[in-house]
Amino acid sequence: MKSKFESGQSLFELVVAIAISALIIVAIVSLTTSSIRNSSYSKNESLAATYAQQANEWLRGQRDADPADFFVNTTKGSYCLNSLDDQIWSFSIACTLGTTINGTPFTRNLTFPGSCGINSIEADVTVSWQDAQGLHEVTNATCLSDLRQK
Image (cartoon, rainbow, N blue to C red; front, side):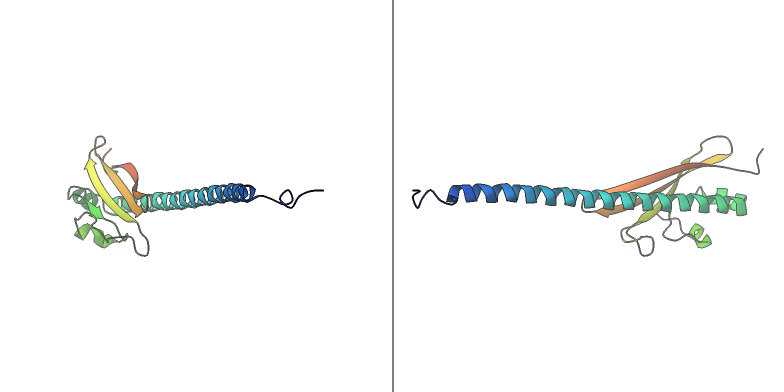
C-alpha cells in the first residue's frame, strides 16, 4: 500500500512546472513585442521612403515648370516640405520641432548641398520620425540637371 505522502505531486514539482510555464510565456511575449516593433519600424521606413520620393517628383516638376526660378531657389538653403505646394519657395527654413507632414509623425527637409556635375544641382530630401527607439531618417539624394543647357 502507498502511503499518503507518495501519491500526487510535491510542492517542489509544482513550483518547477509553474517556473517553466512562466519562462515560456515570457519568451512568447518577448518575441511578439519584438515582431510588432520591427513591423512598425518597417512600415514607417517604407512610408518615409514614399514621402521622400514624392518630394523628388515634386522637385522635378518645379524644375520643368520654371528652370530659371528653380535654380535660383536652390541657392537659398534648406526648406521644410511639410506640404508640396508652389508656395514653399517663399520660405527658406529648415524643419523645426512639430513641423510635420499633415497627419503624420514625419518631418521632410530639403537641402541643396552643392553641385553634382556641370549645370546640375544635388537635392537631398531627408524624412525623419521619432519613436520609442529614437530618431530615424531616410535620405533620398538626386541630381537635377538644368535641361536648358546642352
